[in-house]
Amino acid sequence: MKEPVAIRNALQVHRPAVGGMAGVGLYRLLRLVALEDVLGTGASAITYYAGKKLGMDLGIRKMDDFLALCEQLRIGQVSVPVMTPEHIHVDVHECVTCAGLTPVGRSLCHFEGGLIAGVVEGIVGQHVQAKEVTCMGGFGDEACGFELLVGH
Image 1 (cartoon, rainbow, N blue to C red):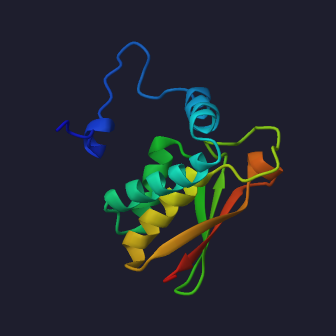
Image 2 (image 1 turned 135 degrees about the vertical axis):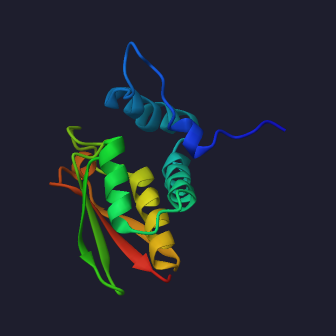
């Protein structure tokens, strides 16, 4: 059986000539164009659950560590304006998936929602489901906002 690529291995980048970061355009072509072309409407659910699994596999136990990772990977400017046991809201400004797009009339940031849900699930120790309630590239909102349902 072939081995999957581990998270730590995937983050080891050696590209002395072009650097460690690929362009946002390349990511968007894969995520928004190629995956949706191949998978159709199922791409949204698959990218959400891929993000959630990754978020859980990261083993992050503190929100500050997650925010630092988001900054390092340039996912966007992530903030948590509300975090109580009953209600968590996360905003992503300059979202890697959609910032700058002409609005398309639907939410786009399923991977980010899954990633956030998976990380928060590890932090709070309960099942977490994220729902994107605002989207920059989807609806022209100021930020991509995620309401997190804890324990559902």
